[in-house]
Length: 399
Image (cartoon, rainbow, N blue to C red; front, side, top):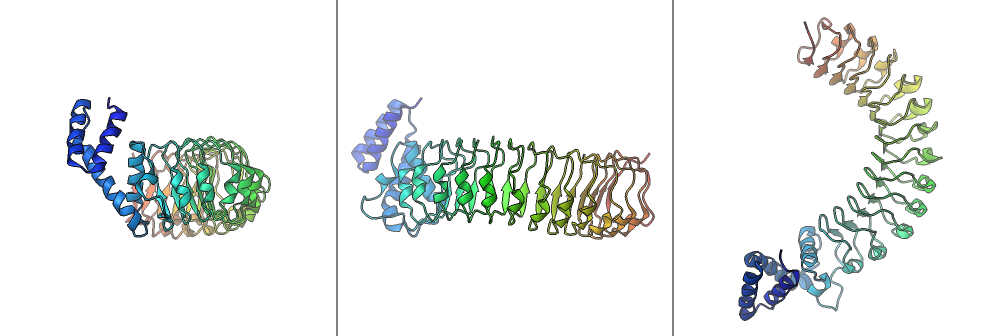
């Protein structure tokens, strides 16, 4: 195992640039079984940055990869980033983006507080344990990525970052959110998927500009009271949670374009769902819903509908009103017939009917001239309607 102290000594000798010290460093490497050539390459690059950073920081401000490399080097050899630049002058004032992605640091370098114009900060896949207090001074920060870290909670002062539009906490260890999160008036995206979060604070409904809320695979069991007041929401993802009920007034989220409730405990849809007239994507896979509400066919902007493995047995007679559908999935749904109006789905390209109880298909299917794929394996269908589109790929069991 390499001796860290000896390695740091070798680095110090190499950084002098003097031949005598370089020769001595080479001898030390041999004695400690350190890869001298590899180390020399890294030190050469570091020396370059030590010279270039003070004069070219503005020019290189947007080159995240290079800045990240210097941080990575400092972490590896226990050196502070500040030691690479002169003490006088703010050489970070032009930096607007910084990525420390996948650097095995446990704390964020103190020098970040000098990056007063930073708008994007990415520290995901690091070993950071808590939100660093140094970012409290980054008043222009718009995008903060804390995903895949060990962070368990956000500080109450998070609302001081009042320009924040994207907050990414996916796959972190976050267990709770502070009430102050409701004060982030400009927040548009909140990513909490694959975390142990079990409850949303009541103040979250104050996020009037929130457009994307991802709660996939969290421990959330219910949506807070007044959730329908989040009127700017366009995408709501709650799949693989324990949520058992949607708000009765869900239809007030009239900007909603995507809704994923796959594998939740929801058993019925509110009648108000028909008011989601901008909804384009709806995934109900494997929920125990037995019927669709009468208003369902008012969702005329739907392009993708996934009803796979639901308990639905009958589709509405006016199902054809959903005439912008291009993908319809009914895999494992025990329906015995399709409504004749299905022939009105003039934009349909993919139709999944595997493992249904269908025995026959309506003649109106021959009107689906844009249909490219139809899957019937495991159903009881043995023949196709007359004049069925010839260019459609068909997966069917025919004896």
